[in-house]
Length: 255
Image (cartoon, rainbow, N blue to C red):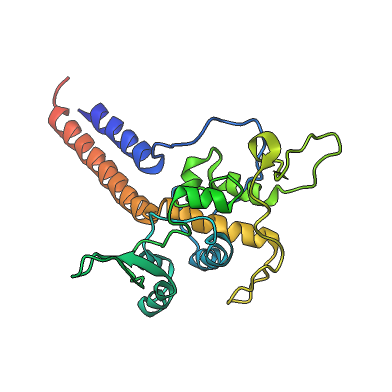
């Protein structure tokens, strides 16, 4: 019985802190690893970084990439007030309906709505991007081998083509992208935006913040999951100690 409890404790730890990944095939490229604050058992998101990352996404990335699994009201979890969220949502138009006359209509987005997609369909998205489809970024950190380190590396990996490299038309060189050719031009550069909190908007800082934001969109329940996990592990350890004490008391008189 005691062994089963110990095994259950270990399995609970693994399932809580190491959920099943959905990464693509592994790569031999050595990524630019970072000390992300949300990694580890006690890891937590830095809300200041998430808010800066949201600004990078909103002003730079949102023109091509959606985050369809995130609702505007979810931004409250990273420090935005309800009034701020209403203002953010009101900047977007959404197709709703039908109305009483059976017609679709446009209205301002509400906090309860999911983020409005930049394109109405896949064909429009490909046409606007020279045939390449810009992926949704909601789960991109979970969907790429290397996770946050891969996204960070990709944003910092744009270089000029080497002299002996046979470049394809309309493609850009990136040392971390498979095949080293990517259809997306470098989306960020130093001082492309201005942060509200005065943080210097270097390429490194922009990359870190938007990657942190995308890590949050991929796993917004991370902090709650870890908090629940710690409570569960504490309970199981306490239960194990109690059962061990009961075992010793029951069998103390047996030779």
